[in-house]
Image (cartoon, rainbow, N blue to C red; front, side):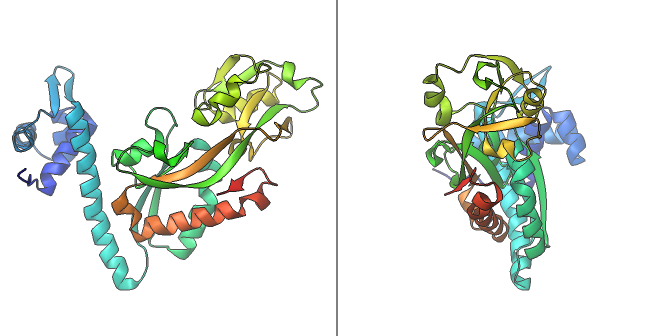
Length: 304
């Protein structure tokens, strides 16, 4: 198959149209004319031999090949940025440049802050941005696969669940516990409060085997809202340890016993980014914090 030669500017145009959903808005973002952007996209489509965008009154919507092409383009452009930062950092002997992290809410609140504090102390030239991403659908790993993040802090049952083309590893395991209003005499009799992200292959079988857990009567936006509702006496919940790091005094946490379910928290990145100094440095720090979590959380988290 003949290699396709796309210039960086063509990749930027492809990404801009995919992100903005139209040629006009992409042209504004790029400081170009709409006709120039439209002409460039047609040229890219001819080179690749596929239609990348559906055109219509709605704008320009990526086709499935267009989504994949945009993901590849983001990753190639990112590696060009990383190359410049990596070369400059190598001259000074330190990690440097931008680092984009996508994390689910619990990790962003309780796992990342100490890790980023340590990263800033060790590698002050690394510039971190964090996006909080819900673990629904593609989730944080999907952000990495799409080229929008360099490193994703994800939840999964097994690293084989990662999207094709990504690499990753488990940082820690966290058990689920029964959470209920403090002092309630019969917490298992309370209605269940839940949130959409609190579902996965790592808990589904255990959950189905528990005849004492009713269907959720209240579904909240996130785990923080669930904690607030439980603290207010509105019900009980089954929650993982990270979500309970800052549980209010009005909430009690009861162990679910030796067969309690666990959730794995890990990272996902691309093979090429896994070799970069900034990503390697943050993964090392996250692993070291994972080894320290049993002391910090009184046995609630387990390093892997």
